[in-house]
Amino acid sequence: MKHHYVGFAGKWLLAMSLALFLTTAGSVYAEDFHAGMQHLPNIGEPKDIEEIDISFITFSLHVSDYSWYVFDGLRERLARYGKPYNLHMSAAGGHGDHEGLLQLAQEAIIRGTDVLVVHPTQLLLNTSISELAEREQVPLIWFNVGPRGMLDLEEFPALSYVGYEHYEGGERVGAFLADFLEGESLVGILRLFTGDYADERLDGAIDVLTERRPDVEFMEEYAEGSRIKGNEIATSWLTGFPEIKTIFGGNSASAMGAAAAVETIGLDVGVIGYGCIQEEVEAILDGRLLGSILRDPWDNGHIIADIIVKWWEGREAEIEPAYATFQKLIYSPDLVMEYVDPLYWQPWVDEYGMPEITWPEEEKTDAVVLEGWHDPNHVANCTWLDKFRR
Image 1: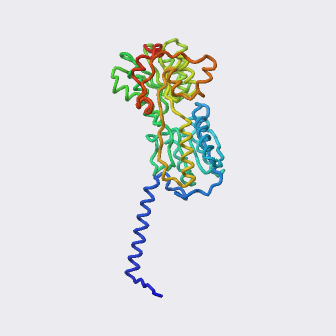
Image 2 (image 1 turned 45 degrees about the vertical axis):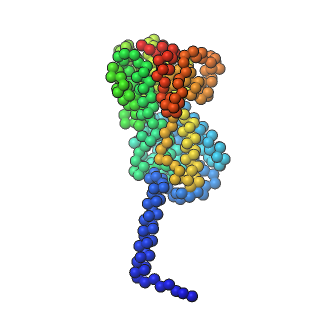
Image 3 (image 1 turned 90 degrees about the horizontal axis):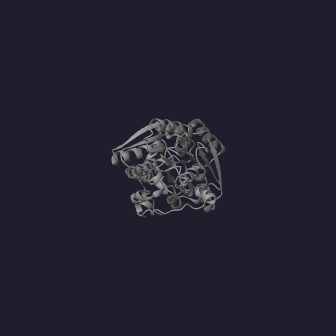
């Protein structure tokens, strides 16, 4: 039997080679898994979980039906995977209840949850949740936040962000109004909260209109997502500035509050919302709302489920830091029927019948169908819009 003797020099070279290997392996590891997940245990390996526990936490179930439908989409996709799971939904006291949201996350972790799925109030005021999840090594998924709104993953780790590019939704509104408004125009902007990532919706609209329509002026106030404040501000605007042509609300509630003010005062002022919830869809069909940005909450739920299963199976390398989903401004009954899930409009149709559609259809270009922009020719010739032209 031969014996191989490794002297001092050989040992030194072996040690250096091993150190180099470990350094190289570490760098590959960092490249394979994004910074928001590197604190998690057993990364890249199937997790020893027979029945996964998922905590779905939102700031409110009363602002809109958005969270409910994200929850439904998550549940639907998880069922398709056929894996055993427990899915818990809980809600804080509202958009300003940052401490309540943190408390729900703490309670979920104490219960032993495997994954946190959280709808934040304002991200910069919810960083304590990210810090909690990092400390307890629990995967965290934020939803209703697109890539532009995400925080630095090294400082505030998260498995992923799933939602919408709020700024791009605003751009869709601004592009539509640039084609819709005639002549010099005054537009009211109902903002959300100072510093809120979702307030970028309003910036997107203002930026596009400023570039394309220098003859448009703005009035801006913070309605803070409130139906009551939206109504009060719109009432003040409409009585003080009856020449106002359009109001863009930062969310469903403030927009519907403004629409109620328009009805009460009796001016044909178009109001645009954001969310395209059932109430807004029915208001569009009734001719009480000019339009609203459609976002598919079920798709958000589906993506969240895919992320959870990839983590569960050790396929974290396939998980992106953030996912942005489709948005489109729905401004007429034909677009409701074309893009909106029947769940939103079927009750209205059952009561009133299908709306008569006699104007030209949108041209189905990629920009219109895939990217969510509008067809300018459709805007120019859609007679349903005439009520709101001032």
